Amino acid sequence: MSKILSGLLMAGLLSISAQADLLRVEMGGGVWQNELSGTITSADTSGIVTQTFDTDLLNYDKESKGYAWLYIKHPLPVIPNLRLEYTAVDFSGTSTQSFTYQGETYQTNTQSDITMDQFDIIMYYNILDNTAWITLDLGLDIKVIQSEFNAKDMSTGLEVREKETLPVPMAYARVRFELPFDIGIEGIGKYSAYKNSKVIDYLVKVDYTLTDILPIDIGLEAGYRFEKLDINGDDFDIATSGTLEIDGIFAGAVIRF
Image (cartoon, rainbow, N blue to C red; front, side, top):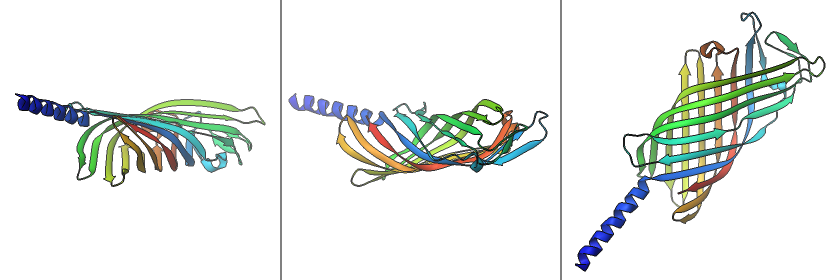
């Protein structure tokens, strides 16, 4: 009888262990040091004549802004898993040249700022789960970009404030390689093409697990992220278009449950 009870207990423990392995929660956050480049195009009041200027003349420096993510993997096969991301993107500066925006000319020393905060809601399926040290996730990302452009000509008082909320559906893929000594290499790619617009967002990173004590692991991550927002305003019924690139290195901490 004791052997039977021991066998049942061992089977129960193995079952719990298997379920725990299937249900995982990870979260992380840190700082992304990035810079902005590209062009911005706007139409005048008639909506016909457009003007384009290079973001370099806005004189934006590199910025260090926060990011955070939450990753949930559950054992239910039909329902997609969930990953949530937030990225703060904000630049400000004083122009070195005059520029024209929405038919108005802003002189040198115009103060401006651009915000493009991003929320990513990712629904994905786990295709490979550390199979031969490889993890592969595929799914759909709904990226919501909350953009804002503010400019004020300090010499004339001319001012503009423009806000837009832009939801962009994107294909999502994540691949991860588990290496010895608690090191992981990971890449995440997102892509969307709609009419004359295209959005690309990818990152590569390395992480290292500092502690491996159940049920919580703590680690560090560092990598490089690149975004390209090639937005045609007519595709999304907004007044402003642009081809913007944001890229730079990031570093942060990771917690796994």
